[in-house]
Image 1 (cartoon, rainbow, N blue to C red):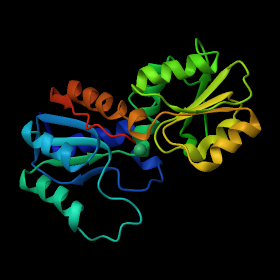
Image 2 (image 1 turned 90 degrees about the horizontal axis):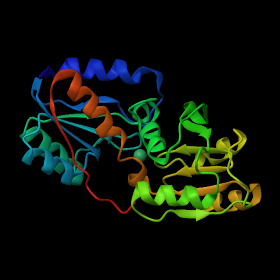
Image 3 (image 1 turned 120 degrees about the horizontal axis):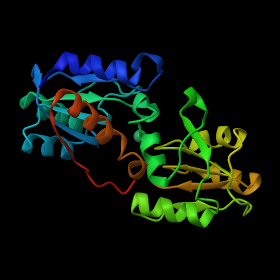
Image 4 (image 1 turned 60 degrees about the vertical axis):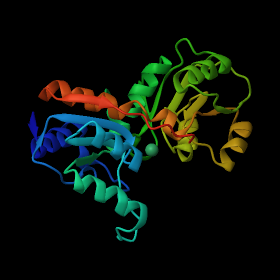
Length: 249
Ligand SMILES: [Zn+2]
């Protein structure tokens, strides 16, 4: 068992939360009961995840995508009201860690996704150094990289082939990090793996020869929250369960 506040300070220190410029508040977003014994982790604080956490009689939920983002107008109405109301009605704490959870070299989304592909970062690139790059290891062809991504994400990625070169270095960044493609190219990778693709990346891949592999936003970000939650569960002797709410994105 751990107190709500001790859990937050542990996570803040572990993830180096204060180093990041982020799009929403990292840490405790909705305050629940004072003590935490049962923890549920998930990718996004959706209504479905909160309902599942209620069924699990969770004291806290730990997610990558919380409820509050820059650009919202501050009103707690509609779908946001439903989510907040359910958390408050059951006195459940909501902890959310966005960029600090992408970044963490062991428990983070990038580290955990990379490890499943067989990749280990020896360099960083891009905005706040959130992009990871490393030696291609066993994935020296685009086909082998696509096979590995298909296995890890349990779906076929969207692929824009480059110039067919052998892969020596691969860059990756989970989620909606298509905008980091050019920084990956500048960092010298031969292929870049992320969650989403937008229109410009297809042309940039063809014109630079660097392959672009989009595996899905949710699909690439299913690994950080449970890894982090499992870590704090073992530190504090908590019960933990990861609940994956399927998402086609
Ligand atoms: Zn994300």
